Image 1: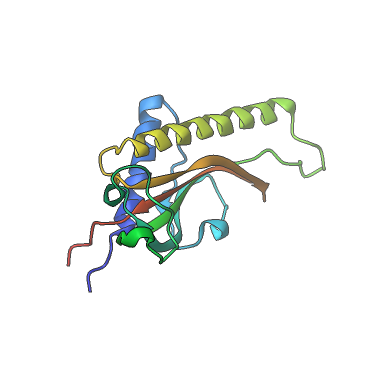
Image 2: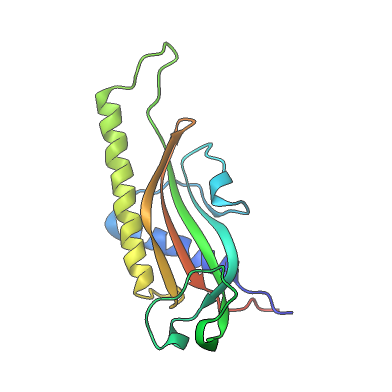
Length: 176
């Protein structure tokens, strides 16, 4: 059996985030990794950039459809007999500390809220750029993609995040 390089696909997405951040002058959290957990269950215990697998299923190659966009992973039924390819749905999260109540129960300052808002919206713009670059088949990115929107999450437990979901056909295999 030949294993699909799902990890390599996740790493390619993380690398693209790092490249885009460097080019745009955005400072990412130092903690960056491809997670073993589901994106909804990744622990937010510090600032971090996380790539997590939401699902590994079957998708339809856009190239096999004569262009267009790949179908989302999950369905095993092939309309018109078009062959299915393995597809991974990956979620990229940029997690940051969110202003919270002080130990005396005082709300965060407007300045702290404003700074957090600027950082979060910059992260959203960065993920939107990554989305565009991934769609344009940036080096190392698969060509058959289905792109989600950039969405906010949280705050929860003193952290908030911006996330981007991409579904990609995984055609590369790991070296034996």
